[in-house]
Image (cartoon, rainbow, N blue to C red):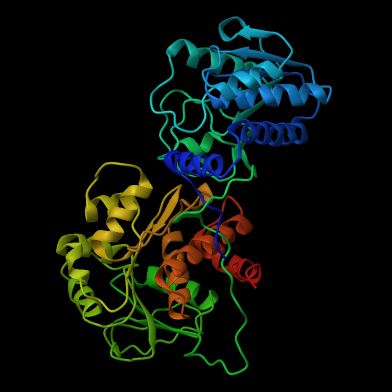
Amino acid sequence: MTGRVILTAAGMRAAEEAAIAGGTPVEDLMERAGKAAAEAIWRHAGPLPALVLCGPGNNGGDGYVIARELDARGVKVRVAALAEPGSAAARAARASWTGEVEALADAAAAPLLVDALFGTGLGRPLDPAVSDRLGALARAASIRVAVDLPSGAATDDGAILSPVPDFELTISFQTLKPSHLLQPAARHMGRIVVADIGIAAAGNLTEIARPSLSVPRPDSHKYSRGLVTIIAGAMPGASALAGAAAARAGAGSVRLQAEEIVRGVPAALIQNGAGPLDRLDDTRIGALLLGPGLPADGEGRPLFEAALATPHALVLDAGALRLLAESGVEALAGRLHAPILTPHDGEFDALFGKGEGGKVARALGAAARAQAVILFKGPDTVVAAPDGRAAIAQPPSWLASAGTGDVLAGIVAALRAGGMDAFEAACGGVWLHARAAELAGPFLIADDLLASLPAALAECL
């Protein structure tokens, strides 16, 4: 299932310009945006007395329409402006508001604050006096709503340009913007509503959505459903957790290969005790997972090199990523199948350097360089493919717990072995992992994700 499109500031401008060139006046787009936002605000806050803050651009123009529409519903509305409107469309919207317009510096607070000062495309910090005034009015309000994006948040990379209050509701137009999902900006957004204003929008950046799965066919067997082989290192407990996740996530067969039989693992996992490198030439292997519990030292190196020597679809996590950083990502060149790499921030920096740009740009650059799918983990998770596709998710914060990454790696390996392409398998794994965490609750341990996986999978059928 394809997720909602996410447009950068430039992408949104291009979409608006295409709509205008196609015969839709910008004034009509502003009317649609303001009316849709007013409807969302009404549903969220009801008749609460409101203060609408309007900036000089088209975001401020939306604010004037919002004020007019809320007033028509019987809401007691006041408008405060930072400056006079700077565009013809915003001036027309200002003229449609028949009430008083106060100066932002002099405006008194109201129970409902609507921030329409600056939206998409903000590229520099707010004037300190404006930022301070916005903060004071936000603190005095009981409900805060941002139009498009909170003023002070960048559009494309999740950066905070000026202090941003916490909002209960953010209303975006036509598509999500990257900062709705990227940290640290995302934590200030509250509930996000995307209002349709009739603009065609398409692109290679999307929100990670629920995968579309199917029940096994009557002629399915354990190998057609996917054989996952996991090479265990000196700390096999992590590999056992990944193996249990792969089995729970639908793999037809999971082999856990270690120096010795690992105790306490599900009976469904196959263990033969012949060593971690046994039967790597099995052509039925759908995905080979290496990294959970693997020491990034001389002991892990032979296992890493043996895995890279196989033609199988690879999922590399944890210790395998640290070994890859030592070798250089060029070691992945020429593989038949695009590997899936699952780094967190520190592992990503070790592999690709700190670099510049936001998380999406960095992930896409890494994917192109390594010719691999990058599952860049964190409080915002980005999946990027070498062909330019990218997707963003905002998983529950309580996944910051030991072992949850091993579970994610196992889920991704199961989906990959089952026939998904590498990008879709990574995205599907992120969604299932996050949904299982939501079902397990905020005080989970990694084992709890295994118990929640069947319910998360059932939502994908």
